[in-house]
Length: 448
Image (cartoon, rainbow, N blue to C red):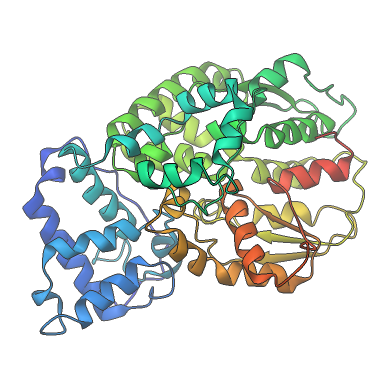
């Protein structure tokens, strides 16, 4: 037996269709096996709030060991996990192929799947995950929706807090009546046929966030790709299912995966690459979907054809060369590496992309923003999320860079709130873009 492993992490398919996956006695036994190993190691103590909660439970128990911790107290540990995968990919020495076979995030997912099957996920929480429906409805009345969700609204935000459990101080995404998919149909950019990469073809998977909440990400990406000769089509069959994955509703994730893979399959057969605008969605397509549906060929094909937008632009630069026309950005850029970008195991592509801009001054922030998807906006978690993300916000502030950007738009919003708390007085000196590709588009002179 080796103490730890230096081998690349390997993930096993999720056995979510088997009854044993939902057997509570077997789940408790696995939780205790994994938690006892974590208790003896503690290498991951500073990653998120799950591990401090676990270690406090054990240290405060009668024996100081796991045997005197009541299983009902495990829920607080599970609730603090944001499924960021950083423990699996960057810290844990006991992930497969090590014989201990630890996969902490997927164990937390299993716990939530059991809760979901038992009907323990509240109705409000289930409705909040329906991002496509919510985006379509809120987009039709975007002015009202954005007024109601503004943190300065002293009438609606306390009501949202009491009814939906969303902290009144947590910044929420805005909605747009003109979605990215609609914009792309009305005003597609002209493809530069003289660019070195001309001949490439790609599908832009708009993602629910890029389509309804931040269309400028898609506009910027499509503009940059067109400048570099890439023919693009915008396709958005459905959400990737990450919001449902967070709640353990694996069946809905599988349904969405098959729908998206089925619609994108013919494009892949015609030679199109698939580009996701948000790293969480790229992670789902590349890694999570194949583990949920390992026998579905269309899901496997999509996984192999998928790219994150920053990854794709860097690939163009390395293999073909970028089109001319990039101009320097004043003030430098602090780039936050989002957890779901890091979990793709592709390298720091956002920082690589920003360094392609002439005279680029780029700092990289590799600390957690604390947001964790919908986790960080909840009343029970918001202050903890701000605390977890304080180091990232402080690094952004101390960098002295004019531009601060994250690959994850939600993480960027959270870092902004952390920066605002660190600023003593006056307007902040920094500017936060929705995504690194938005800054890259500006360097090309693309109107975003």
